[in-house]
Amino acid sequence: MKRPAPIPDLSAPSRRKRALSEEERALWESVAKQVKPLRKRPAVPKAHAVAADPATHHAAAKPIPVKPVTSVKAAPAPRPQVPPLAPIGRRDRTKLSRGRQEIDARLDLHGMTQMRAHRVLFAFLQRAHSDGLTFVLVITGKGKVGGLESERGVLRRQVPEWLSLPEFRSLVVGFEEAHIGHGGEGALYVRVRRAR
Picture (cartoon, rainbow, N blue to C red):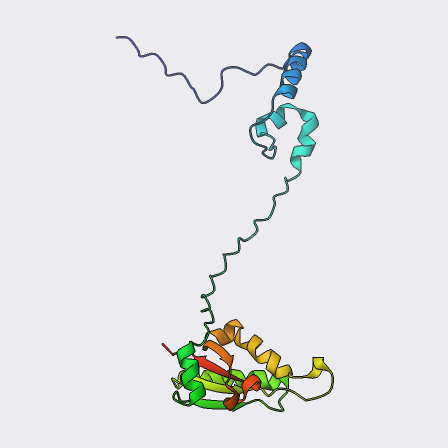
């Protein structure tokens, strides 16, 4: 009876790599200089190539610095859109000026500092908004008569700017200068946004 042929051991390499001759090395270096890589990748020395060349063995013993992974910041959540301001309609303005449309509340900012007036105005509009009011009158005053122009009517200039800010636009639909009977240049009709 014939014995089966022994199975060759494929785990160990049967051949040893030979070293390149000087001529082969020079040819390889000239070819390598002409080739452009597709993508630049950090060069990582291979373990078997390092072991074959004793000159690079000491360099390979040093650990390769690894860049720390930077945490990726999540994109900030989109801010809710602030509704735009709209002018008070001509019909509503006429009704207000003639007294056919009731003014639900009044706020007089005379004599207040800008900081206090801003705080009081915001609280007033929040209450008006939560109470379901439609039209309010904000009295800013016309400013001091006489004196420097830059000092006149600070609140008269500031209140329209404040009403245009995002925190106020969520409470206000629009505003316009009041009729002369309600204060004219020194007062504003403000339409309050309805609570949802």
